Image (tube, rainbow, N blue to C red; front, side, top):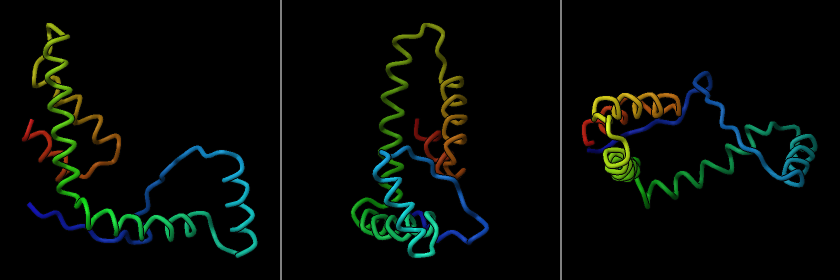
Length: 115
């Protein structure tokens, strides 16, 4: 299954939060002030080439496969450690976690179908 994604339209932005050491924050802040740009533009310009390179090595579909394998392992552990575990409860919890993380519905559906 090939999953096609498109660059985001400006009004379809998502927040990506990360704590960084003070020296990184300070330099990024100084740089963006000196260059009259924003942190969002700077970080996007740095991350986009990385994503392009990563996608050529590991396309979205491969990452979804890796997530499926990881979640299947989590289900095996939960099935053993929790006497009242059911696949329905596990899938519902998994769906809630993936939705909260902002994963696309098409990926969530595929992941849940493969558990």
